Image (cartoon, rainbow, N blue to C red):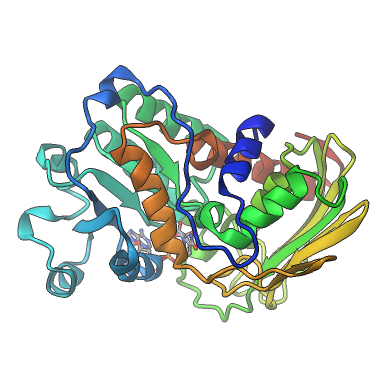
Length: 373
Ligand code: NAD
């Protein structure tokens, strides 16, 4: 993570206790010539959701809270969902696609951006197809299932001159902006230790794509651990230099044939800070703790949809509860609508950096030693 851009990002956004939520005020960057043609006159960015599962439903419901985004289209392989979504969200027929005719979206000026909400292993294909169709893209976390795939997605978006964001909702959430500020500005001195873990007790459906490595890329590390890696990186404003990791026991072998059931890891950072995490499908855990030289700060719940509770050695955090999905989409849409370039921490480059760490964690757990990142 580029410390300077992160620091100015946090400074722009830091919210005092109890203050109103501000939309991100990213500094302007020059944008590629090809993308400059696409400065929109309309007030709202027209978004098509690609994949209409659980999270797409949460996103769809959040559009009513959005100032800059309109749910304009859908891409689905299930005809009955097309009928239902058309009715529920007043989506015109010409903005409804399936996975076969998706590429013809390039001829549809009423769609500006495709939001890919498919299983992780499908992110790369649909991101590249959306880029080649000339559409801006948001892709859900984790960005892809390998670092190499992440780079191909970045390259495709650059070649097409479109903007490419990862759906990191916590980059717009006030409690997380505060832990970025406290950590990166060393408000309580240097952070020495971070403990951040996320887990759910997930009763198994053996057909769930999360359990199939080709579609998920891995178990809870890919699904949940990416948030722990993110929080460690953005609290410190540093990139980890090495990792050790251990797979947990497999207690339900009929489910965990292809991916891990739980995993624990330890990251070391250039400053000497250490971050320890577990991501698990065996029990519920959702907490963040940072110990600094002169104090501490923590969140619990920390990563889920909230509402979050936070405090530091100086007292409770008091930030408003926001709609995380609408705030994230609006933050991205504002930048695109104003013809600016997305800052790196919300772009594919950020997702690729996380994937580099996730691959290192798997390697360390498999090899049993320390892996340099
Ligand atoms: P889901 O299983 O509920 O939805 C996946 C959708 O993909 C379904 O509509 C399904 O029909 C479709 N699909 C198309 N081809 C498929 C195939 N071959 N196998 C399985 N499904 C196929 O999953 P979800 O929970 O909505 O997750 C989708 C993406 O969103 C994932 O990348 C996930 O990590 C991410 N997600 C992000 C958050 C967040 O807070 N940012 C939360 C949940 C999920």
